[in-house]
Image 1 (spheres, rainbow, N blue to C red):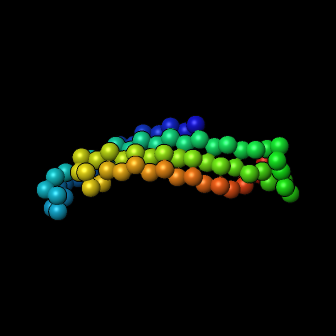
Image 2 (tube, one colour):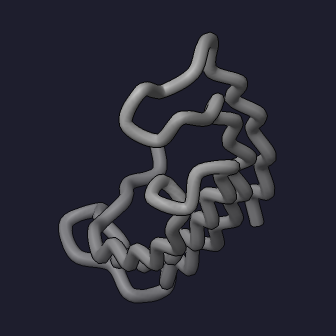
Image 3 (tube, rainbow, N blue to C red):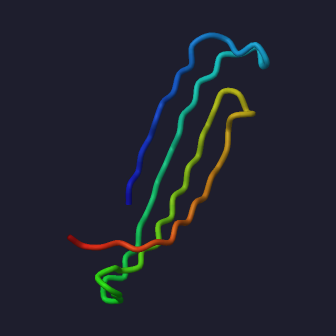
Length: 75
């Protein structure tokens, strides 16, 4: 598990919204690797990441779910 919190203050007022923008981004991810299932030294891996961007301007607020499927190799 990889938790992360980021604070992004932006300078000045955005003319389109008439407000200053400040973002808080929360991110957490988890990976699952099946090492006992191997092909040519590579093992399958599934990664899930959740990101929540909380902005003072609603237009920039979002939730994101990402799933990545790949392979990994131990060196």
